[in-house]
Length: 149
Image 1 (spheres, rainbow, N blue to C red):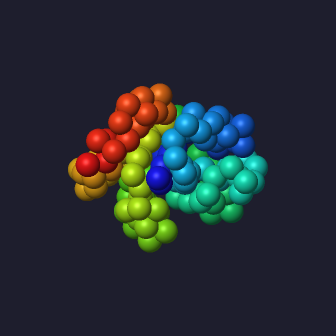
Image 2: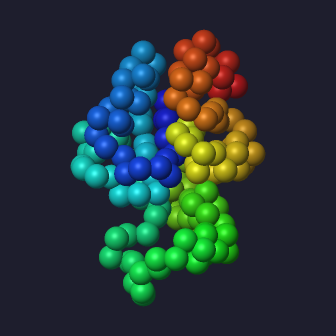
């Protein structure tokens, strides 16, 4: 069973991802993939089967530093905020599209990832899409066969 976790919040840490994996320990052969906006703060090779980073790399930050709150807010509005940028990058990146296409469950961990989860629920009706890990665990443990039919 392929489980994809979407995250736009803080950079994922090994203990946080390990905690998500532990919650799915009772399910048969759970394969955990992480699609994240920020680069993980530490290697996740032993915890997640696949990690796809969609956000800008730290070296991509060019140009003057914007200190004005008003200018930063306007730029976010024009670009659509993190949720729109995350969804746009997820649609465009082949590796992310492939990971999500194979998913049986998609979990949005935060509000920024909820937009992508909503779109994925519409595009992949056979996948279970939830906001938050506890909802996914309850749904999948209740009757995994029925959840994926």
